[in-house]
Length: 319
Image (cartoon, rainbow, N blue to C red; front, side, top):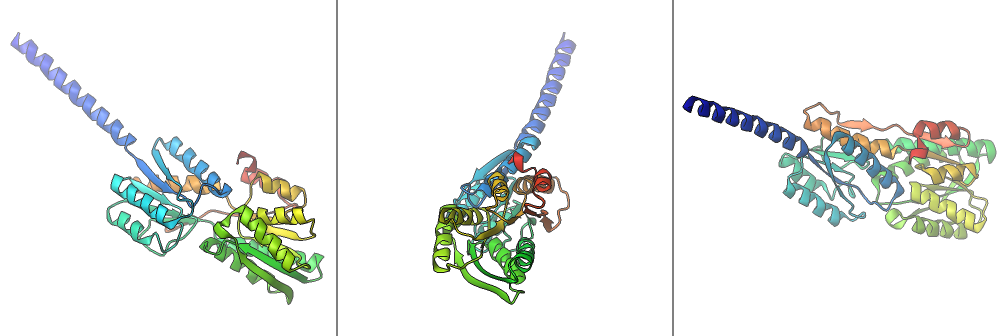
């Protein structure tokens, strides 16, 4: 009887241990938590980025915390501090400011939390990697297209206005790439380069209206991102002006604008791919895989000439 009781107890202990280990393993899998922070969820580009992140997180079965600081540095710093206190496994960061978030980012790294940055490069070497498009190349691509158009269709002369969100390092680089191309033509004059507050579309429309009012003979407007570009498109349409708009980013509305002849060329990033790659990279780091210091997401110039092929290649209709 004692022998049977001992056997039963032994079996019970073994089964309890197996169950405990199994439950522990499952729990550990479910404990992977990624803290993410974008620049602002009010921007179409970042809505697509978040969609990409969510898809990747769901596919991997991990928990993804999302912070929207609404382009405010103090709000983003506070969110990152919360992630550190909570002890998330990794942070995916679309930084509001390349310098302002550095202290809290380095604090996270010092406490063993790897940080993956995307879209905006930070002024620190402590992060795992930077993931994003080559912003200077983006500007260069649309600048080359614009330069060729001016030479072929406008006799090599044009007056150009620039709309950009000046605090964005990405837009600084894009604008420089654009200007380095178009100003190669002696007949090109940059008549305005104006900041769009908070990068918002309604503000971009106002800026574009002001530029056109001050420069009645302006020929071209360049927008540094989706909202600046489409704000310019809306302003030109409202004024009934004969002004060509070129810019950056792509979505279904911009595709339609190209079809309608309201937007002449844009360089498409891939925000969904950017978002999913950021999450996938964080998980690879947690698995101990080697991560390159820079991961570049390809871009594509889109105009009426290649619109159909480009929308298929970029899967625009899934946005």
